[in-house]
Image (cartoon, rainbow, N blue to C red; front, side, top):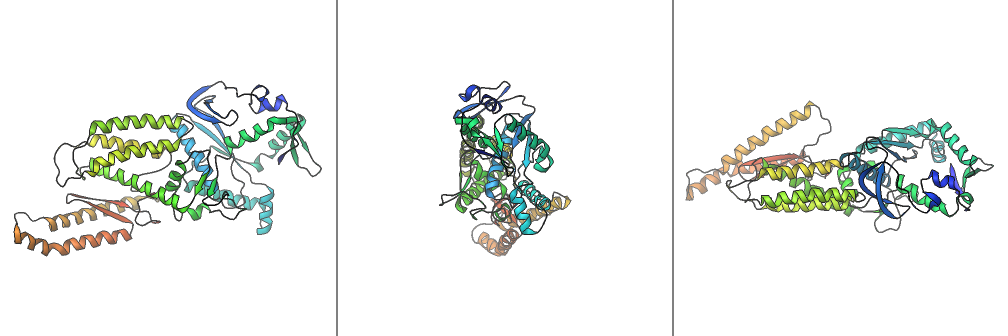
Length: 461
């Protein structure tokens, strides 16, 4: 491992290798294509244009895990944030990201843990590497283009360190450790420390609410990703991460996750209500269509500007929520009878945009998510569709009293009350099996799958 000691005067070669510009005084804008994104430059302390050599092959190095233990939410925070930025660069700004992620599969911690478990270091590293990949998949983190394991690149690593020593920027000790020679780096070494982590390894930490400490194995206050996903979904965690800047620490608590869950539930409910309106299953008063078109256009513009401003996801999400709030108010003016002008097109456009935005950052608002994806899923949907249609016909019969008035109508409704009670009982029973039926007046009923972790919530919540 390469360590750091002893400050001293700087040298031009290391400055140039680190891309710090002449004498380390300023940042030199590289040549290439401007992505249209401004990002925080930890050297200058300002936002600078993100310039890439070519947008069809943007190289990204991500420091991966040291695989000796279970991954926890601190890791999840970093990798989900990286994934969100990668998705934004790809899907919003047209960059084709080629990502390489290192896997440290030989290390003192790995050897120590392997000895404790009486297994080989290689076996232990392989086990936790695979578990890490499974955790990332569960969090919907896109895999890198290539994994680079330390054990597969030791000759290149040794050669690189030998080159640093040969140029006078590091030295070895009698025990075999190698240290940076900070006398050769001088007062510029702080810029090395400040620049590298913010770009590759530490976009902020996960802090435990009420404690001045970050989540870590050494503090014994960490939550494994697998345990977390027993209670909350990956979509909830992503929304939780989106509400803070990628460079800031996140304060973790159950209440903040519950808040994110409720927010996601509200978004999913809006999409389902808006879709029901488009399909004619939800009736409401006349809609201010011109106002909604204008809000949709301004939202699109504001969201892209926020993402271009150092990936300002909190601002982007709040802008989307504002659009949803105003559109939802239009749907809340429900009328009992259909008729009058309708505006399905604008709501269809809003649905499409809201779903597209959250899909871009890895969150699905679809109400019929399935794990298996096989033919049994299709069969399930068809059966539930038929069941809900049959139940709707029974309700409509129980509520209809054509031609009857006064006491006769009252008598008919009393006689049919058991049918309505049976419909209500069926709806409650279906909730037990993860299916929620919504009666939208007497004209239509819709259904959705519930998340088994929170029986009364929708998928992703």
